[in-house]
Image 1 (cartoon, rainbow, N blue to C red):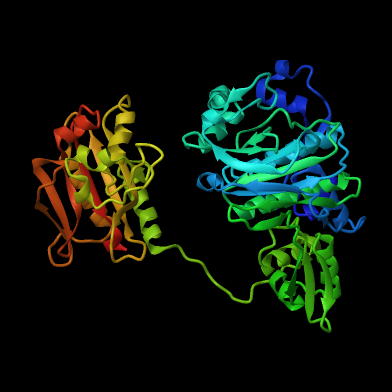
Image 2 (cartoon, rainbow, N blue to C red):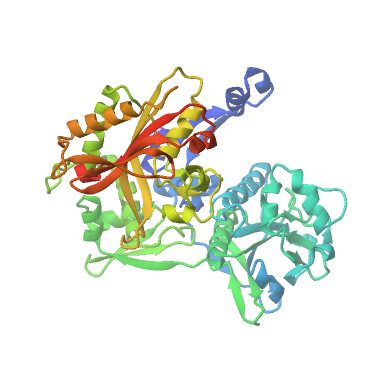
Length: 567
């Protein structure tokens, strides 16, 4: 039943498992002994629905969907003048993490499960919308252990000293970095501030360190099950994301406050003296025409039933203007509603994808294979029939592969170069298929000779006239590797290719080969292929220097032509 409910709500119950099952699958039965048998549901949540990332939000969403409860109205309480908390942002933060937002959850009651869920939601948000804490980092603190106003500033690492979470003694910021360099969880975040001259840090009015975002909180302010008042701060490089994260944190857990669904606002003072009240908890209304929803989804529902469908998806809606419009209230939990099409999607989910009638499209089309691909498929068959084996190699290669190793300069190849390559093997887009095949042979030297390989794939060269600045050409490359060069075998293959393409061996409207030179070829053993007077490629015996650079020992001959003129 739960599986069906999840599907109706647009989620997927991935699997029903337990800790024991998970460990025994990954590490074997032995390691799983003593692990818990408690049934766990693994639920797949779409990446845009931050409000479903914890049990509280998920249950609330499903209860509203089942029409068991109404969507709660979140309320921010602005304390009396001089009584509220303030977070002062200094100008030193501008260089490293310029933005900060904050809120307070008053008189909250934690239990073990609620506390675990609270910590778990922070972790999920850190991985997801916060982009591994690069855009936003969340800090939650026991407000009763500190006194405001709070200051968010940035200082030299040697000047920051505090006791990090769950540690026994004080460290300076630079020692903390060394301490966590081996920590499996925190070492992934060190690079965010490591090489900066100043590290961000938040103090209270007595100089107690709350946290050093985005790395670690101070031990002094850590939350326990006894905590009654929680101070939440989000610092980051992206103010929009920081607001969303704060809204999600407070809307999910304010239901455990003494006055459910209320949040105490915090005043944030910017370096320029302007103040701002957070959390925003902004409600906004959107207007959508019922026929727009019906048309996009392919259903014909009345405006009032569409309003009901949307209300079940936590988007409180009612019909206005003689049924011509739906007025939809977007709650602060739904940052994913950006455009009318997001509202349409929710209406479709609530209606049920399986309930939408299938219809035959009004336009009738017949698909056809791209002529170039059709020719490629036909040629692949004939080359295989000629006794050659097909290889598929990477479209990216290193600069040496297409230049130095083939005896030319990289500027002469006209290659497209990648700006920040992950590895040395993938620096440029290939301008010829030859290096890929030579590398394939090098990896298969143990195979019995002769080796006969071919590949028909795209190469890429710069082209200032193309709208993207580069152009693809479909090339055919074949290689013969044996104790003797076997030029006649490659020449024979060229003749066979021309025969199946119905190109006769003559100059006017057929093909000819003429002696030529190429840096990758043995002098006097290279020819250029002309079809109807235009050059389409070369064939010849590969130069011994090229062979040694690719770590090969035997001679080989090769043919490479562009097949696009034959389409």
